[in-house]
Structure formats: structure tokens, C-alpha cells
Length: 114
Length: 114
Image 1 (cartoon, each protein chain N blue to C red):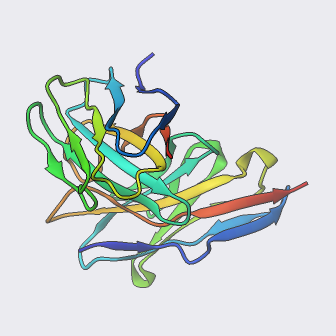
Image 2: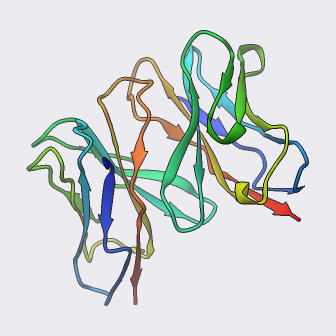
């Protein structure tokens, strides 16, 4: 079964600084990978997804993520963080075979200091 | 505008009472899902449905029930058998059952049982 790990429970950055949120997955075949963002008390919104092709994926709100098969990672990045980016970020992995339901990581809470 | 609506946003119930959470989508999606979210736990799948009149248990289905009589509706009932029902509940839908189908989430219902 697939699994996904987000090693950082909380990340604190200053506004304008760069950001990288880590995501590691476990699955033998090519995974399908997603990053979602959740503002407090709201539902989740898709930031970007990868399922084939270019390993560097561009998303909404200036986010990008890079799929690295050798490291089983799909880290989310943003060159300059805005205060409005403060939210919970979830990585999810779906895979060929078995259940198609994606597995979500436990999330990383992003705190942005002015 | 297409989307997913969940009502109510906040729900309060006394212990021992069943309660039904509403989820409606007008995206013409075949698949619908219910997740439970607790702090630090990420999203845990309760039930999902790929087509009308069919649904499957997720990882934490005990104490919950669902129905899928219409394509656009997937209500969740939290029964008195659920030991710890206080949580944030998220409904989602996706186009179909393809591994790379992204999920669209509703705004959530926060249930408090005392």
C-alpha cells in the first residue's frame, strides 16, 4: 500500500523568504502526487499535481513541486512567501493498482512571520 | 458556479443522538468521499462512493453510515455508536476513479458532541 510522510509538522518562515515543504512517499510503481492547501476552517484546494511528464510541476499561487523518483520525494517550493500563504499543506499520493483513493500525509502547518 | 456545499458549517449535538451531515455537488462527478480531520491526524477516509447506489467503507467507517441515492448527494450519518464523533468533517468529489483525478473539497462541517 502507498504511504506518504510529511516530516515537518510546523514550518515558520519570514514573509518574502523562500519555502520548501517536504513530502516523501512509499510505493514501488509510478505514483500520482498531489499538493493541497487548507486555510483555517476551510476545505482543501488543489495546488498542483504530477502524474507523468516533466518532473517540475507548476501550480497555482506561485507554487511549484519537483518529483524526484530516486529520493521518493515530491517537495513543494515557493521562492517568496506571502503572509496569505499561512495555512496547512497536505501532500497526497495515489497509485496504480489497488485502491485508487489517494493517501494523505498528516500535513504541515506553515506560519509566516511579518 | 460549480462546487461542493456542506451544511451546516457548525453542528452541535448531545451524546447519544444520531446526526446527518449534508454534502451536495453540482460538478457532475461520479465519485464522492467523506473524510474526518482531527488535529495532527491528517485526513482519514470514512466512506466513498464511485457510483449511485454503491459505496465502500474507508479506514474508519465504524459508527458512520452513508447513502448515495442521487449522483449529486452523499449524506453522512454519525451514529451514537461512534465513540468520539467531535471532529471536522470534509466531503469531496472527483470526476471518476482514475488515479490522477484530483479531489474537490467542500468547506467542511465542524461537529461538536457533548
